[in-house]
Image 1 (cartoon, rainbow, N blue to C red):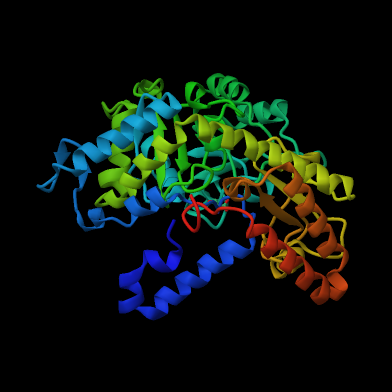
Image 2 (image 1 turned 180 degrees about the vertical axis):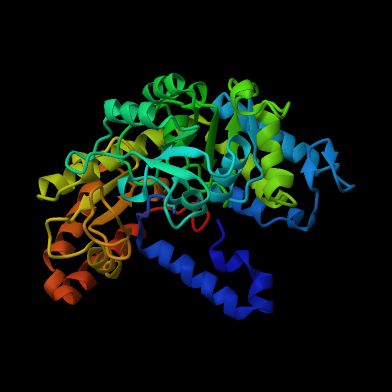
Length: 437
Ligand code: DSN
């Protein structure tokens, strides 16, 4: 298969500076361990659709109801992508136009809430997302946020406590999902709570969609009014978001007696024309390709291996004496907890990066340090698993992480040695979209 250099001959000619920087990124991704849990490798097929001439087309609206002419190709593309998304997640309705995850969540707010409504979500230190109510985000300033989160000691969600908060606060919407909660989320329990207080329940599955497809985690679709996601993390798609929803609105009378729209229409209108203009058809075509790839047995095996690899990595770190948020992981990520250490999350993440182990510093539940410093390091296995790595490699990586952490006072020699060993390991594997398959 072609190397990156052969795939961009025109770019190489017309803009060598950008070409060289893309080459640099390909080189980095081929010689380091990509362990940021929200990153992955899109396939050559996804990259080709995403880089196609469909970027030229404007087609505001939805299939069969556009504000532009010339939709003979793009209408079937979007329809096919929608059908594939619905079939993969067994959903009644899908909107694939959100430009990414945050705009998808913004559309959910716009579809279900009015400005100033009360919304429950998990703050960033507890493992939630910016758009679930963090104070510096629109979700924290435009809505009244009611936080819930894991216990700072156990790192686990306490569902009885969440129920108490919901009963007391009576939110209109409850978010379930996040970016650094390492355990299974029990949507059935969240649904009981949401039903009891007559709140909309919305799952954000951006991080774990691949685990749901693989059957490692439960599918939230039957329990939720809406489900939002990105497609570029575990699903290995282009940079984009999507929203799945029920068609009927069980709270139409209670919350929206002034409109006659069902949930499907409300999310469609919230995305376009509420928040966005023309859909990115090159991206939606790549989403269709992604959903097709994700519907295979090969992908389900991949999803199961991601979780097995993450468990193996966690066990390797626990065995070497490290603290992990919640004591381990049930999904694709883990968070090392350095609250008790003199070293901060940022220092450790930067040291690991020098050794070719690319992860990110991250807040932990009850973090005493600020968001730009933190006491945690978040890492995950989706990209390594896409390369074909398995449990034995995870144990080697845990050993390298340990070597770096034990040499933080005199980093350079240890980092250089690990960096070389990491590059050697990477050279033994294919990298989707970069080299090999
Ligand atoms: N910022 C992404 C992550 O890394 O988890 C989520 O949007």
